[in-house]
Length: 93
Length: 166
Image 1 (cartoon, chains in turn brown, blue):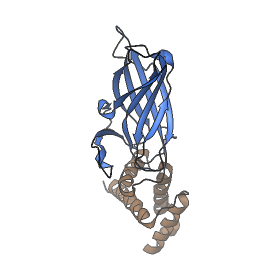
Image 2 (tube, rainbow over the protein chains, first blue to last red):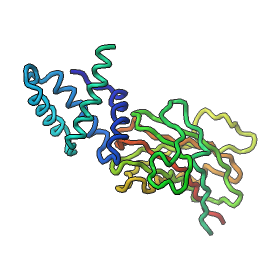
Image 3 (spheres, rainbow over the protein chains, first blue to last red):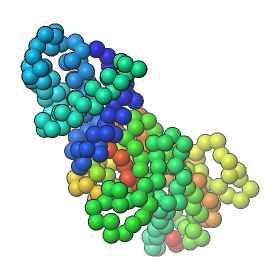
Image 4 (cartoon, chains in turn blue, brown):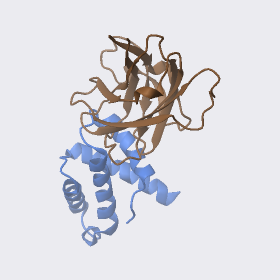
């Protein structure tokens, strides 16, 4: 687990902005959702060895619990994709 | 006594070199594009980004100055923190100042309808300006301030300088 940096969060927020317009959430809400994905995938013991669908449900629940904002499933997919893109590029490079 | 307004459009402003503040055709975000024009985008960068311009204090200026930042956004929630710094320069004073005469801050919640006009007003002290001063004006979005919560670009249209005459 890592705390996502302000630069990383800003980069992902900027991509969200184009895809989610109009933006109805705040910085804190999208930051919390992205950090919840990071924390869940990297540290939750339940994730290891679970089926893909279960991991998806755990991650989705973590995003739901991260703030009062109601993310749609389509938005959650994009948030996860952004997190994965950032993370895997960072880890590989 | 009457109230006057001098408008300085976004195109008169030079963005800083951060890459997080840049000229943008309004049509990129507008749906109707009825009046094509250039605006400045202040990105949601988590940093402080700025743009600067100059104007001259009109000869009928007496006092009651206000500076209004006029902007819009594709967001329908969140706040933007605007910092407005300025230096009033009289004849034989430096046009290369190292610090502002005055710095003001205002936090404004964006309109609940995307692309509606937002106005963020600061009130300088009346003694800062004198007739025919050249004002060096810097407008910044302070993304470092925790109160700046809007997760979208602030689309800057310009600044209005309001004042009263005799």
